[in-house]
Image 1 (cartoon, rainbow, N blue to C red):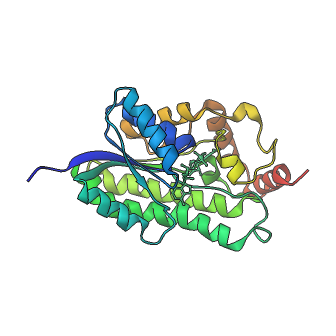
Image 2 (cartoon, helix red, strand yellow):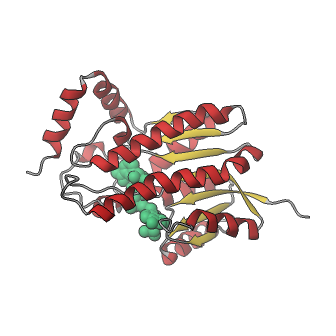
Image 3 (cartoon, rainbow, N blue to C red):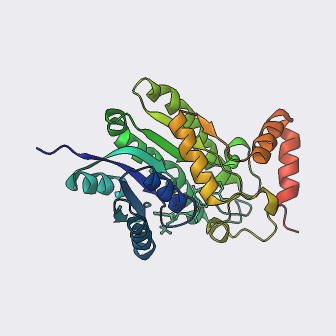
Length: 260
Ligand SMILES: NC(=O)c1ccc[n+]([C@@H]2O[C@H](COP(=O)([O-])OP(=O)(O)OC[C@H]3O[C@@H](n4cnc5c(N)ncnc54)[C@H](OP(=O)(O)O)[C@@H]3O)[C@@H](O)[C@H]2O)c1
């Protein structure tokens, strides 16, 4: 029987940071599986990667919020003779607004995608990552480090991603699996529109290109880094905010996020 081919599975690859990560993984010679809901965007990305002389990625068009999504992805990989060596849990979204005023179903869907799906895919593929001595790159956020009045549920989901990834980093090290939390500051993508983020929500000078974030995330994981915070300004800001009293930080964030 032919042995299964190791691949890097990237969720949320149809846009933004996920698409940038697909290019970085492809440029380093990894065979890819691209996952998201929009077929045309995934196909266009697969075409582009192939045109650049890389192996054509496999595309899986699926809504990850379906309860059976992770099982279906696992089945599709098995049927195609593919085994995850790398898992990039990138798909996610945020919502701006006080939690009591935001749609309940939308917020629960955010927890489902940002937390449950990420956890289920990690559980399903952990053995395969270990077998191939690969890695897991979980896209968290600077929001992981702080509570977020005005984006409360989003920050809480990303705190989970950071905590989960750091624990897995320790647990899976002995199996040769590198687990990294990628914690970007603002990146201009479709994220802002989906989150209904008003203009001026964050200072533009803090924004970093998706391509740089993706490259730093990939390199950090390959080096075996536990946490990657791209950009020195954001790194310093995160370190300073962690030193300040929590009450003061909450007041600052609340004041900054209040609608003007
Ligand atoms: N942009 C930022 O400022 C920023 C900062 C820190 C962290 N992050 C994190 O980075 C990650 C990527 O965000 P981004 O900025 O690249 O956002 P984006 O441009 O909106 O991309 C989100 C990706 O997730 C996919 N996705 C969303 N819901 C899905 C679902 N139900 N099923 C399958 N795929 C789904 C989207 O594809 P389809 O619509 O085709 O399904 C898209 O490919 C997220 O986890 C986000 O929280 C972003």
